[in-house]
Length: 270
Image (cartoon, one colour):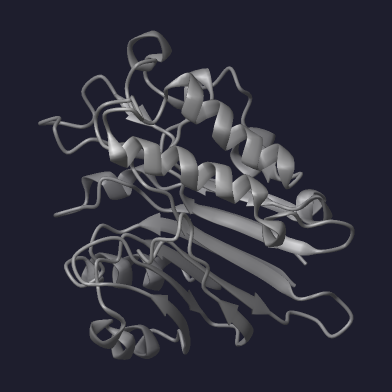
């Protein structure tokens, strides 16, 4: 079975529903994981997605901020929402999919990790302190430690660019939130604790630049190509050899009224 999954921080699903529809019509992934939907569950554009052929939708949203959603052609057999740092702020949702009777369920975790504000000092910036605590709790979270034949996928806007060439300038961004050493170390600790495989860096050498986000602050995002890799797809060891393709749709950053993130897509043979 060919299985395709896309993760995308859409930065308001209602504002950009036409862009999402454009993408789904062209690419037709089996599962779309959205972050920063900024939409309470009762206002989510369910009908539009169902008209596009996506009947199965799991939501964890709130008004104005954060929010995650999983949109799927494949039925869910279970769903779960977890809170971190004792704060109910719509940053996680997971679903289980049955893709074959003889296989364990395919579990998809969708995350929107806190951005962390502008000052990389937890003593003076509560948002940065929250981010570091959130990453620590992800590391300790037992459901994020798949083992054996468990088929798990972890995706989302993890708001950390952990490697030197995940940012346009390692030297200039070492003191900028999203690429500080403490954040990078903590995200990579989450990866190691769950024995996850970072699909992008499994397929693209660490020596190559890879970005999924470009700031709105640049008048022309293509000038200087000052990006960061904030959006991630990780798979459990049981799925490592199943991945057949990985793509970042850079062109989406130039669409009309775009998100500052672009869709990231993985294909597997299950």
